[in-house]
Length: 262
Length: 121
Length: 236
Image (cartoon, rainbow over all chains, first blue to last red; front, side, top):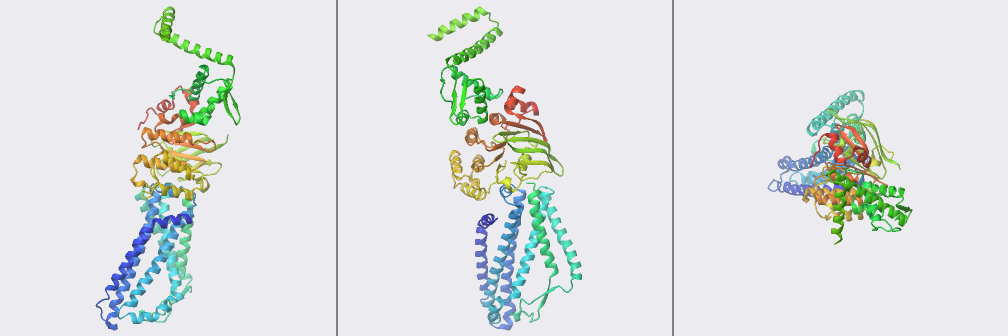
């Protein structure tokens, strides 16, 4: 599997290089928007806060593009001719899917770290905001709760995407439909899975009312207005989502190994 | 070598080798090309060449020594018999063809005599 | 002689169609089998099942005693009838890819085949003509010392010279410890390479046997028999 990951990363080299350079350029551009802003904290803070937030938005877009490319390439392999190369390799379905999930994890971590870096850098030079932010950056980065929250988000995103992979694979294996019908079918599968999981989640929530995770990721960022009260993050729904993701991974691997129709 | 795909190829290979033995091109004791080499030369499935060699061995024209190769076997008498046999076949075909055109036996013999005389000059 | 392929009652059904119906045959080790039939007869489906790319609906398929899966993919070298390579890959990179994932890939043989086909490692797949892409893919497939070679229309898109080059390479690379299954429309050009032939029509086996045996029994070439069986011949 690692050989496959190496090849996929190599194939993405251009995307990563160009993408990261673009993000760097955008960060610089965003920084220039600070020029001309007043140093008056009360007036500038809300305005200048928009800059790092916009940057965070760009990062989300970057991540969305990479993820879409990930799943579109996989779909092309399933429906097109290049699939003969990948699926003809002596690899188990779990390895083929695993390499894509790993790519997703790499993308997510890259976006998180890159995003955090550029957003914090901008926040630290934002007029009106900088003095509030700078003293707390160090402590913020060491806030365990924040990283736990990030891990939770990573797990949920990966599980969500795994369900998408399952939908796409299901459309091509059991039904063997040609491109567009298969896409519709897989979209329906994903929607059905997500809807039924939401229903199940609600039911479980009422049963396990006491199950919450108390996190305070913004503890050291008092200016964000969250105060020092810990927030209650639901535990059951994300756990269930991750379970679904694991099931989707197993089901997709099985379909690839036993029900493939290229 | 041109093959007629309509009849078994191994038989055509056998015929080719038998002709060459009869004509003296392949002498007794001479080694035949290996199955692989001959297959590459005439561009045919090596299994077909193998089958031809096996059948030739069964008819007694060649003998295979394991590890060394396939050699033309038999003595002067065998080769002569082969030559005669092949010649009879050629003559029979010729005569039948000429008869089908309506020629009489004496005419056929005359034409053969004239043709061999011309060929000699 | 052992059977490399044993197929019994193989059926493949899709939602609307049946691609293969009750196909049964064996292929001995060291033999070359010609898979013949018009378009839509099920040849490509059968080959994809052997390559592990399509799953059977029912029946059994054994390659070297194993059902198609991860292990068989390591010993089956498949040439699809469409270009399966990335257009941005170079010939050399494709070779590296194969070498990385297939332990039976013989780099020296790959270089030799490229030389015969007049290709160089730095050429990008996207820049090659259809015939050259075909030759590149054939080089990749034959550079593997596989147990079973499954070739789907390997001669399509090749000019007569390239065809004879490929046939020469086929004979030169023939081994008794492997087998080949070749589907082709160019029956006349290739029939002298077949030990066995299998005729498919709409997913069913209509005629099977040893090539030389069929020549004797039916008094004609395999191409003649093809015409008899299907009523016409599709020439390309």
